[in-house]
Structure formats: C-alpha cells, structure tokens
Amino acid sequence: MRPEEGVDAILLAAGFSRRFGTVNKLLVPFRGKPLARHTLDLVSSLGSFRRIFFIAAEAAVQVLAAGLPVRVIQNDRPEHGQRESIRLGVSASQGAYYMFFPCDQPLLKADTVRSLLDLRRPGCIVQPASNGIPSTPALFSAAFRDELLFLTPGAHPRDIKHRHPEAVITARIPEGSSLIDIDDPEMLTLLRYSLDIPGQP
Image (cartoon, rainbow, N blue to C red; front, side, top):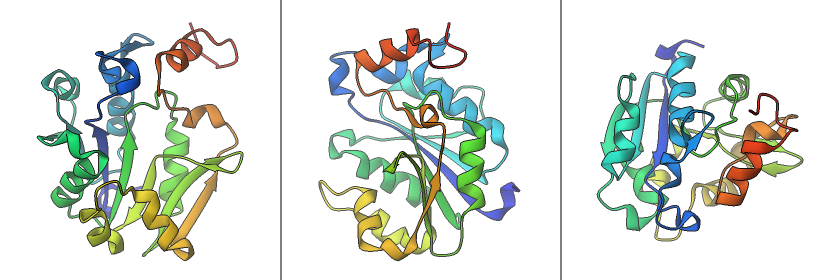
C-alpha cells in the first residue's frame, strides 16, 4: 500500500471517557504506555497513509503524538461529541479516503488495518466485523465527505452506513480480540490480566 494512493488516517481522541470517571482513559497505562499511544504507534508505523490527523481536546493527550509524523488538531468543542472530531479531521483532509480510528483499541493489528485498506473501492465504506458484529476502524470514501462534515447532533458515521448499505464492504476478522475497545475500567483490567490474549504480561 503506497501513501500517495490517498488514504488519510483520522484518530479520534477527544471523548470524555465518562465511564472512567475523572480519569481520561486515553492516558491510562496499558502494556507500558498510555492507551492512545498504541493506536498512534500502529498507524504511524504502517506507512500506508498519506497524512495522519490526531484530533484531541486535552493538552495531556495531544502530547502523546510527540515525535510521530502526525498533525495534531485541537478540538475546542468536545462537548459536541464525536461528530466534531470527525468534522475537524475531514475538513483538514484532502484524501480520497478517510480511515477513522478510535484510540481505545490497543490490540488492533497491522494486518487488520491492511485488510481494510485492501478492500477499498471508489464510493465505498469498509468496516471490520467479528462474529457478525461491525466494529472500527472504518474507512469512508470521500464520496461521503459532505455527510461526514455535516453530521447532525446525535448522529454517528454508522448512520451513513445505514443510509447507503450498497456501499458497505465488510471485512470478516476471525480474531475478534484485535477489535476489542476499552470502554470502562473493568474491560481494561480484563485485558491486562486475561490469559486468553497472547502477549499479556
């Protein structure tokens, strides 16, 4: 996959992490580094993206991108939800495709990301799924640029998928652990100590 082929990565890191209380989960240590840094390192190491945008509200999260080939974009309106981070990322991009990454999937694998990139086609939306359940990261063709830029309050990119089922391409990911996201402290603890996840300390 060549970077000049026009896929921009947009990393979403401005959420409130309410289920973690006063702690921003993206700063919580996991396997020796802050949670969000896993996604930053993975995406930066692939060499598959034209540009990488890291959308964050807190300064403590923004500095996690230090030393990486990433453009940090300040989200001054995180209270508007994920749609504001999506708007900022898409506005900054001139790519033919946008690939959206939440920053709470520390087990995400390079092969999973590459499998999604390999499925892209003009006008497509590519999503991974395990056991029939759609997940992230997700890739959108720039054909959906306006719909992504103008998401209404409470709307989500999955609503675009529902409006355009003919555009959706699903990659079946057999190893579901690659798609696990950490939504609460209990899941963080489970992943830290589970003997079923290869490489766990």
